[in-house]
Amino acid sequence: MTQTETTDQNDAAPGAEEINVAESGGGFRAYLIGYGLALLLTAASFYAAQSDFIYAPAIISALVVLAIAQMGVHLVFFLHITTGPDNTNNVIALAFGVMVVGLVVLGSIWIMGHLHENTMPRENMTREEMLQMQR
Amino acid sequence: MSATTASGFPGHDPYRLGGSHGHGGHGHGHSATGHGEGGQASKLVTVAYGFWIFLLSDIIIFATFFAGYAVLSHETAGGPTGSELFDLNRVGIQTFLLLTSSFTCGLGSLATYRRDMAWTQIWLFATGLLGAAFLFLEVQEFVQMVEEGAGPSRSAFLSAFYAVVGCHGLHVSAGLLWLGTMMAQLFFKGFRPDIERRLLCFNLFWHALDIVWIAVFTIVYLLGANQ
Image (tube, rainbow over all chains, first blue to last red):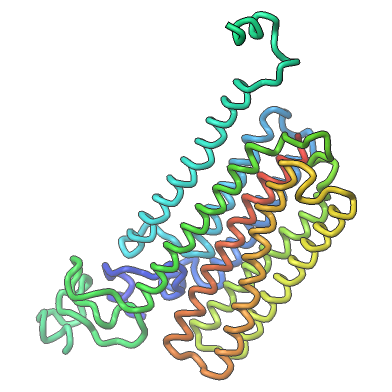
């Protein structure tokens, strides 16, 4: 590969190896690094969930952080998403996808959580709440 | 036409103002100068980009299932909860199998880049075996749970569980069919440009399935077993 090809300004296909193998840590090494990091993060997730190493109420946050980190590892080392100019379109599409996923998941949890609280079964209500409903 | 004659700076034309260098490979051969001019991207780039958009919308479908699961995971209707049902050892093995299959799939992609037929087939086959082992464990889990009376109709939690995990399992099954087809096509047709595009799309699909599985084992199993 000549220098000209690696500095071009065109689009790269997501997952294309020709970008990956030109990187200093690319090719087989990229997959090996990604595999190792993903194994470590997976092991950390399973350990954090099953031990009391992490303060119990914080386990959810720890697991979410570890999962997002591992997704990042997969995107960089397996799908070869980079910050390079040839990857701009891929990154923009990804950012839009992440935004919609965030809206759907967080929005559902938020709305349904409130709905759940406001449609509490009668036996859990206080007397005043009952009277308020009857008015 | 060559860059040397067009730009007048032989050997130095980083933004390829002189147009295409006429080198082999794909993705760069037909495009000219650097600022969005010079015609459309190569077919490999547009096909892979289109498939990337499909994968992102597929991930949005999964997100709706995850949202459903997150909302319903406490609604066990007096039935078994996640911490009673889930066997995290099996989930750990499943995770290892799928992650390793993603790794072997990547090695297959590198072999494709080298135009190495034997290793491409070997790594694809390894990917398929690992994927099949993953599916076997998942089916085993479902059968075991249904036998324990924890089928999809037992509670809203279990309906959501079978929906999200089953949807991922269906994707893996479809991926295995695709993988078998690709191995046969590659064997009989060789590294033709269209076969290469399909292989790239398959690799993207398989890596995306592993990314979805990260969310499955975190949200469904690890958080579900913690409740």
